[in-house]
Length: 460
Image (cartoon, rainbow, N blue to C red; front, side):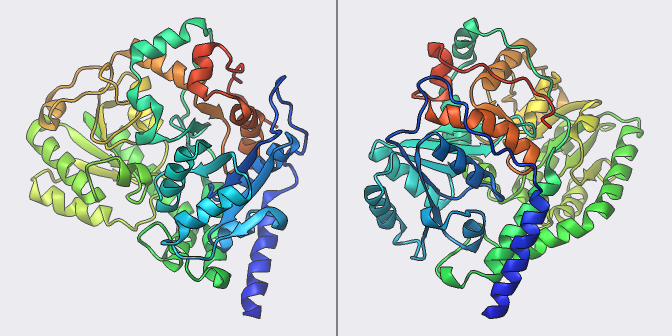
């Protein structure tokens, strides 16, 4: 037990060293009338790393009360204020009632969480809504990597965007003159993302005795998650070489090709908002449609998610499916990397509901989706049978997508990121004001009370 404590201490010291000394410690510059007075924010689970800690600090500067519920040693390690930390050591079955008690005892007015589909969050959101509380949900950016998503009540398939039409968005944009920002072409803070993921799971693996009832919301054990993160960190240089070679062969192959954009099989968008239960099912659908519909001289490029760690047997399944459908020599696999390089020559793209599809639409490339997605609007996403889509797809309405994209950048997309110190500094300059505002980002734009948005830029 003592050795576990020493190991956890060493990991925490490494976290502080890695974090550096550049975090912004200034006071919150709120607009007139924005204050946290008489509000109490309860944080649940957040992105790996110190973002929730920094966000809570700034809310306190705005005179709000801030509390944090932690479910494991990883949550606890990234929340440095012991006085406002509430460890939950009970069972998953007892969580709803315990959550209700916390809301009452602390006079909570707002809850803050990252993602809304893991069981403890989905239950908390339902209870908070019934109690009339404000629900703040953060998520990876719909147009990542240089933006983060902030919405109220739900994201992705639970977002208000699912019910909005492009004409409604255009009407709300009538008072906006914002220039359209260029799309991102790189993952941004991927190394920090992987680092904090490994560190978080290291804490859970080595120092979790206090939280004996904790069960991860993913299928793998904490030990397996930790080993996959470490393996990913160690193999990054080798995989980068492999990726560059594969990309070079495709770009210089001289053949027309289509793109299939994969997601992490354990990602909440894939698990909760798609018709597939595994990536194998999606690959089978795509390769069958490609074999039946695409011209025989066309190729298919399977692009893995940048954080794919091998838990899903993608390459083995690809080899099996290629043989089964007679498309040997026409299917290529790329492990992560920059999507922009492959999109330059792509004829079309298919995905379940990946946010990477935003780059596809920005370039005017035909897109077919299968799951619920905030960008799946009839003006620019195809609903053709996949066989017919590969045979010949229509281009999306570029003007409609440009308006849709502008709408997101004026509302739920905040410049910045969760994982790098630079990204957090940018993000915090907008996030707290939006949380303290009486209206959610969409209603604020429609009523004309939305704060001016920052243009994308490098933040020192």
